[in-house]
Length: 138
Ligand SMILES: [Zn+2]
Ligand SMILES: [Zn+2]
Image (cartoon, rainbow, N blue to C red; front, top):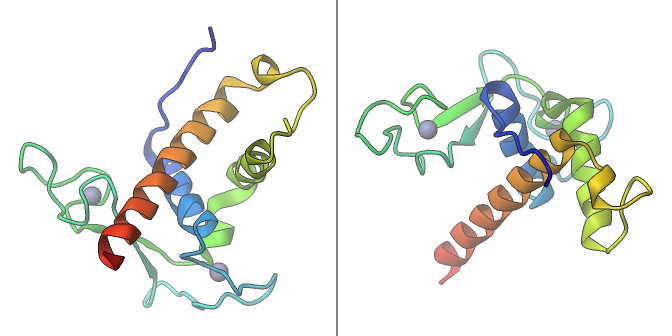
């Protein structure tokens, strides 16, 4: 059995942002030096919180911890940059996996628990984003 870790805190947010990028919702036309949003501290990109469905409230009707009860969390730099190297690499690995290619030789058991947990979280986030899209389209 693979040990599974639940993503927490900042990493969870990074994975969320990476999921939006994967689904083509963010930074589609960003280049290395220029972000399509040009975010700043005063004009950050607002990422919808999937944790609470943007309601800002958790299941007990208390302020959502992931977004401080605002329904959104703010990213004051290019979301692609915010995601960071490690999560980006995992996200790229997942693209290979979708095509049936494992990024590291040796099979799924050789992937680190961290990577596998990140893939799980990315996939479930992407699914939720796509469900949300279908809901809006339908
Ligand atoms: Zn960007
Ligand atoms: Zn929230």
